[in-house]
Length: 172
Image (tube, rainbow, N blue to C red; front, top):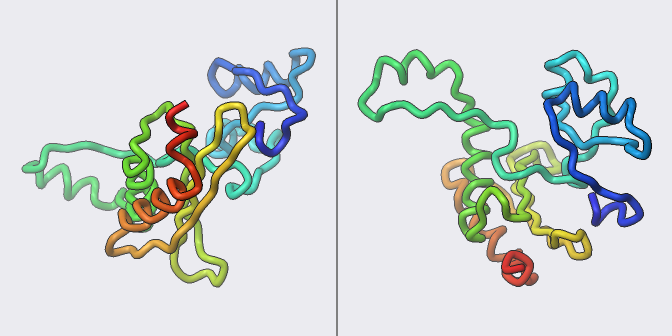
């Protein structure tokens, strides 16, 4: 947000979603909060939101995806959970996580990733971004995602970002 709107003062906002919404509604000087629309809608608060383009404010890698870990030999549980598996989400998350891993980042790294549909509506594209913590510099790259090898897109985007100087931003 600091990159898009350097005129704004960005401050931390703590609490659950209703608490954060209430803080925006009642706190002097707090004009907005960045929150996931899914959480707002789940709580019936979606009408209070304006949706941002994900290409303007890319989310953290894997944001919004749920993962369930089971024992490798637990076929009964695997079968029971199969209806919850979404193949396109799995491809997207694999590409996003591969980007983060290739950059050597963790959950605190200023790395963002999002897989969306290509302009023509066929196929997926991984968008990756590294932003300096003060928002002064932002590097963005993208690559098509091959559903049979989604990690290759993450590695390709990481190489593109490194070519733009991502390593120096991540080292800060």
